[in-house]
Every structure is written in structure tokens, then in C-alpha cells.
Length: 94
Image (cartoon, rainbow, N blue to C red; front, side, top):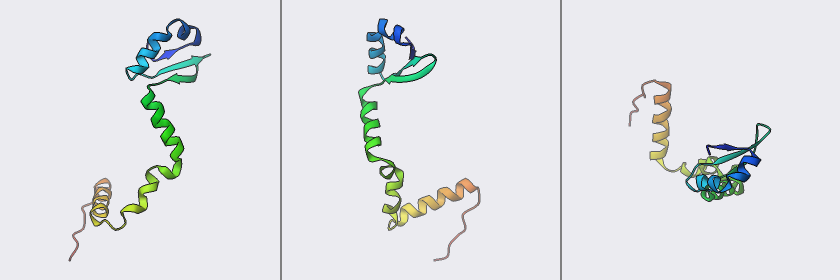
């Protein structure tokens, strides 16, 4: 069946499309070459619903302030930033 189906083809091969989705392969339904709906595994739908319910405040931004008092986390972020900039990390005197 593949990953795309038009409505008339979907009607003839619906069971196959459902099996693909059960196996973890989303099936995209197109109309006039444009994606209109998808048949997805229920786990994917549950994840999407949780993400929508949490909204923008429920994403990674929601944890940004939770690690202010964890020095190991701050040190790890600092190390990552320095590696990405490809600059040697300055040695700090204690």
C-alpha cells in the first residue's frame, strides 16, 4: 500500500491501511494531491493529544527554570555551549 492513499483507493484497501498503521507506519490520505488526513497508530494520536493539551507552556520551555539550583546541569549546559562554539573552555580558579 505504501504511505499515501487517495480516498477511492483507501476505500478498497482500508484493512491494509489499518494494518500498516498498527505496525507503526502512518498512512497519509490525499485528495487532489494534497494531504487531508492520516491514519496513525493510536499511540501517536495519544501523544499528539497530550502535546496539544499541554500547549506551548508544557513543552521544553516549561522546564527552563527548574534547574537553576542544580550546578551540575548548569555546568553541563556551559560545556555544551563551549563545544558548539569550538572554543576551549576557560579554566576557572576556585
